Image 1 (cartoon, rainbow, N blue to C red):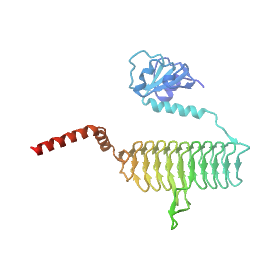
Image 2: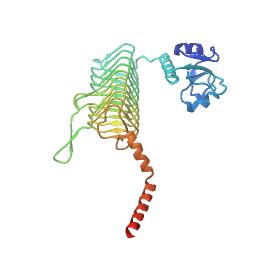
Image 3: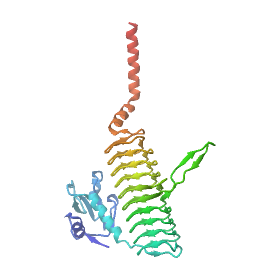
Image 4: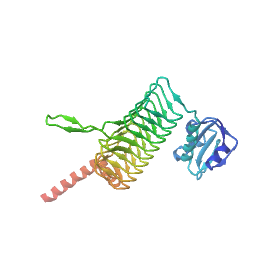
Length: 344
């Protein structure tokens, strides 16, 4: 489909600088632009590409003013990044959606499947499962006994949803994710080994959650592990049993939260960060990459470092750490001077 600059600007509430009749039919990064494509520039680091890109249209922030000649038609908006994301959403919505049940899929007689669903090759929907309307279940996906998938959700290839788990509306679960595997629960016994503690709870994923590829979310020992509305988990994230992840919290790849911890609303957790078990991370907290959180942190905290201390303190500590060789030489010299004074 083709869209003119005039149509796009009208939809985004933008201002056109250039040819309002120019049309585009695809998206491209600004540095890889080509005729008939639309790009965006929100980060000043990419400004130089605006002057050289071959893209026909570039979306920019309303406050930006060019410092040279621009060949492309500009559409000025309040938030270039957000508007470009909105266009991508519209483009995705226009893509044809798969429907129907593949002949090799296995759907139990007691399962309920809503209208307009797609169930791909070799997918399995087990006894008593409830699949809402417009759900897409891609090949080799497993939905266990009594599991529930809300309207409009998408489970990509190889997703495993264990028995009894609940996934809300408009969720996206990427390939290889495992929802509801047993929590890591073991009790030491008299023989020096470990007895498994049965994990009889479930996982509850609320509406509009996105789960990255190969992420694992453990079922609760009792009750439910909860991923609240609007949370976004990256690839390779590990969520332990009985954890609660608050609304609109985002977690980057390889981060992990151990059992029974609670992460508040609108938190940001960087890659490879880890939260120990049985602690609370307050609403709006920011946990930097590769940070270890070993104690509860209050609302609005910014935590950084292997031992998870206040970000400002960590920066001061790190500045001293970088200067340790010089500090050591200074201390050694002071010791020599003191000893010389003592001898006098």
